[in-house]
Length: 422
Ligand code: HAM
Image 1 (spheres, rainbow, N blue to C red):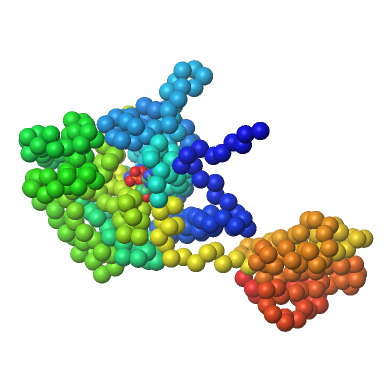
Image 2: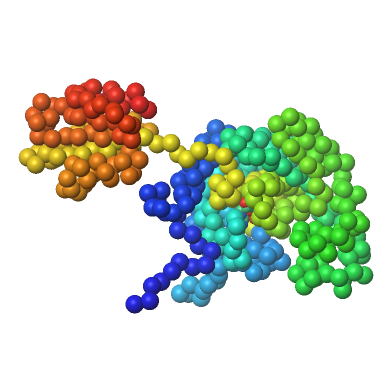
């Protein structure tokens, strides 16, 4: 029968034991470390469903954005409602906050999970990918901006990112956006014939998005285009300079007035962190302020700012060593009392959470169980036979170490040994 493969752009994360590239292990390590950073900053986890009403993203990310326009996985449910797989997490968090009436509160949320966008897959770009995000709700422009940049500095250090650059910009107020869009239109309209189809459609639907163009011809045209900085209120420019100054020792921050971000809900400070190690898809995180989103989705006026990190991209560029775990493999060779031997492993499992205890469940020979333990990179084997069981003892054998001696020890001694390991 013909075999069925996974969908294009959707990746299986395989356990490290298989001979595939061990990206899964790195992704899990990245997720754990991110969670720790979020929790250290006093953020609390929120989990929202993978499926939402399509209208949620149309009204937030925006109908003119690539994400909604071309990349949504949408379909009709059995009642003919248009629903979709979420392409990002911010709109869902705000939907939930409004629905649960938390929109009067000050809150700091974080989330982690898969997102879906129907994009052309390439290095660092998938159709199902994982994001970790944070949203700071209820705080107007000021310290919340610093909190996010502080977190980015921390994250760059923790993940040992090579030469990261944090690009920052400010979109001003609604008046700024309107005036700047108009002057950009006046500048670009006479050059329409030099723009590609995608940039022409951006010009028509949201002129600011032309600044995002990757087309070298458009980039050349943009060199003499008006800059948003000419329309920004003084306070916006001051904020950018202040942020750059405060974090300049730890973080390479560049003010980039062409940074506009591809989602419609942004309203003030925006940013993206890039790394040249990533190639064309160089942003491993992005975000910004979105003070109007809550009211646009039917909630109260609630200022907000947030960001999301692409987990696969972060895993690609972080110089983290693989999760260095210690595995102890239990080899039960007792014919008479297998369950008593198993109970020893059971009791030790809670002793130290950093140690992985793998009880070999097959009835293969001692030799082949030891071979498997070595193949799995276990650090120690605990061998329990009938003789040991009778005297409440076990054999501890270090693995992958040449000429190492095995030791007979009591169960209490083994417990202490495992405690000291972690
Ligand atoms: P975004 O810039 O669309 O922002 O996505 C954030 C990050 O997700 C990107 O910088 C990138 O690392 C990763 N990413 C996006 N698309 C893909 C893909 N197809 N494959 C792999 N990684 C990808 C947002 O999603 C906003 N919700 C961020 C935010 C939160 N703004 C305010 N709060």
